[in-house]
Amino acid sequence: MKKSRGRTGRKRRRKHLRSLCAVNCSHKLEYIKLKKWLKDRGFEDSNLRPAEFLGTGRGLMTTKALQAGDLIISLPEKCLLTTGTVLSSCLGEYIMKWKPPVSPLIALCTFLIAEKHIGEKSPWKPYIDVLPKTYTCPVCLEHDAPLFAESAETIFNYSALEWAWCTINTRTIYMKHSQRECFSLEPDVYALAPYLDLLNHSPNVQVKAAFNEQTRSYEIRTNSQCKRYEEVFICYGPHDNQRLLLEYGFVAMDNPHSSVYVSSDTLLKYFPPLDKQRNAKLSILRDHDFLENLTFGWDGPSWRLLTALKLLNLGADEFTCWRRTLLGDVISARNEQQTLNITAKICHFLIEETQHVLLQISQLKRSKENLKTHLALVEALRLENLKILQRSAEILCNLSMATT
Image (cartoon, rainbow, N blue to C red; front, side):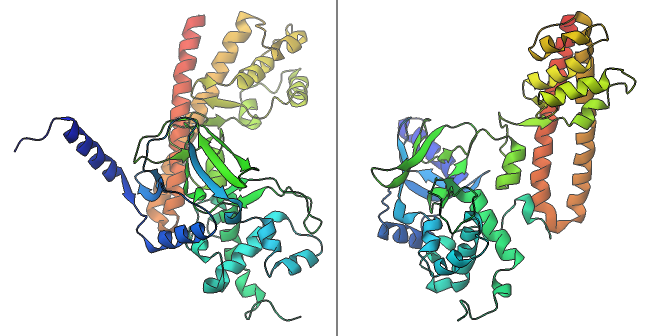
């Protein structure tokens, strides 16, 4: 029998390919219970389905095509877990009495640990049941009448705090709350958003997200298109992969915001200590904040890195031009060429260093089975760093050839 080549056949093949990339999980009991729990609190949604995706893991799939400006999700205020939730719980009276006052983050951590501990009795159980049991953030690397029947030490231990802290750090939405006297002065800007927090990050999409005072719901609208049965993404912000790994425990491949940082120590390795103006140059760079955020990116060395190197490369007869250098002026052909040469040397040094680290990671993966997941993430980060540095080396080579 011949394979269908018409429109219907194409539709079937596309649907089949999508099914290979995503597995619908909405039939699982934990998600059925979560959706019922959310519905009881006023949340209605017929377009998003929890699914497992190839590459990103758990996320939300849309059952209808989304256009720019479409509403992805609108989560009622009753569904959000905030410090207000904590204070209205049985923990509230204890938290309000604590001296010195705790931070909003610690209050939320305490609430999560307590709710997880009481299990079936917790009104938040359907949400807690779908939260990750473990996290891949670097912080998780191996290392009167009583409120509870057990001692507090057995419940509020380091492992429990680590889980609660990672839950809040990786899953909360930004939502500003008024300052309360029972909390310390740290900003109260956290809200856990059940179901909404299943949306994964992509650096290639744009969204508008905010609490709608009229509907009393937290709403997200997309500025991008999304095909039917594809994963719906949001953007956590223009973060590089180092930030994403540290804060959220993952890396985004081919992240346009990724960069490789150059430390001031690495910078100074390539300048003679006998330069009489060395200390003065360093002082200028420090005073004008040019010793931090020096990077290589997908488009080569950053302007800040090149400017810092140009200033360090100023000859004795050019030193009085340092203000012009910081403004981006070309001082001399010699200065430009020497800057490119040293930038290329730094780039090649970082390439060799990254290759050495990748070799170490490869060896550790074979001997440290318990660290395999974390090491795979660090390896992905370093592999992308290597790609960025190799592209930067190529750009620098082309620039050098163009100026000679």
